[in-house]
Amino acid sequence: MPTRFPLSSFYFSANIPFFLVYEKKDIGMTTKAAPEPPTPLGRYRVLSPLAGVRVSPLQLGAMSIGDKWGSIGMGAMNKESSFKLLDAYFDAGGNFIDTANNYQDESSEAFIGEWMEKRGIRDQVFVATKVRIPVLTPFFLLASLTNMHTLDGQYTTYYKHSDDSVKQRIHFVGNNVKSLHNSVEASLKKLRTDYIDLFYIHWWDWETGVEEVMNALHNLVVMGKVLYLGISDTPAWIVSKANQYARDHGKTPFCIYEGQWNVLKRSFERDIIPMARAEGLALAPWDVLASGRIRTDAEEQRRRETGEKGREIFGEKWERTEEERAMSATLERVAVEVGAKNIQAVAIAYLLQKTTHVFPILGGRKVEHLLANIEALTLSLSPVQIAQIEGVVPFDPGFPTTLIGDGTQASWMVHIAAQTDHWPVREPIRPVARAGDSGKGDASSKGGASSK
Image (cartoon, rainbow, N blue to C red; front, side):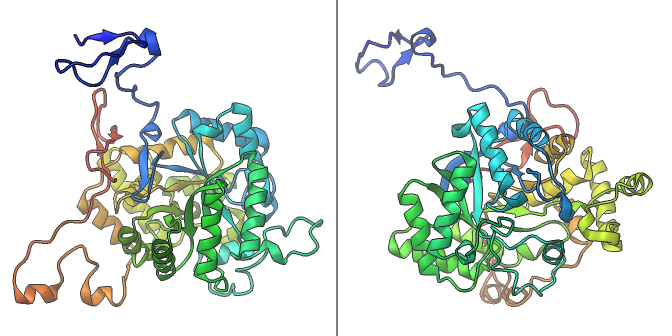
């Protein structure tokens, strides 16, 4: 039994450890470990090697939170249903919310700000928002999700497009200092806060220079309006250039990259993942369920019979393609093998177990879907199962990877000279069984393979 002292006592001796052990009644402190969280969302992870903040392993995507986009086929939620979804995520242990200045014509940030204020939890939530995004018309969204490259005029459209009171709109577009200032001030007001936890450059505008962007973002950090910086939907070489500029000039670097990545679209793995590994960035994949195209045959038949279909933005093409059906079938087989209750969780688990510091963004509007997808944190996929998933849709990493490899193994050119042992890359956190767990797929993630 260690010696205990009241709070007012200070005693130092060569025979007693330097630290003091207090009675819990004296200072309300105990050395007992915190209880297990209600779900694995409450097992927090360090965001990235460049950001020591601890956040939930799955983010709540807030593109559907708000009530303004129902008419463009993206779905919408009134305030009551939005708050229910936010409550469900937070009460399950979640603390990482991803939104943007224009989501749901700015009502997403407004709803989140009101929700945090009403619950009195601003200091418990890590909120990410973004500057500058194109007008989200059905055409733009369909094009961005189907790899159409006809959007040159759309990339730099203002986010105040629905506000008729704004007559001169040019300063609500782009990544320049003026646009950044306007965006941050508006987001702070809507979120009802005096700081933003994570602030993203949403798209690279191809006109504002790296120096202007990084200096402006760093100034926001210095002023205390922003804590961490992220970048989204930008070529890997620009991110590397920006972070090198930050290092060389004592500026704040980007600590996380957000982009499109799922089991059907894996070009993210070509340059973005190697860049993030080298730069120390976390990864925040969006569209992780391929816009709802990952579903079983039974679910598709149910939608056909009920008329629910899929997102209206896809029009008559809401049904899956042959490729999407093949992927869903493979995910269904893997789900049976690992004891998963739904194939969507398997698709998310694939992303979590490809590399370190991955924080998938979960969208959607239904609480039951959100809670079901948390199962991804309990699934462990074998190398064989990962290979089966990757074998459905061909993926070519392209040159120069096809010539020199991706760096995870020693180059064949080195092996011409001699046999070598290659230091392994860091492994992602994988689920492990805990006391009280039962059966396959019923485990919580544990930092046995640390991502820090």
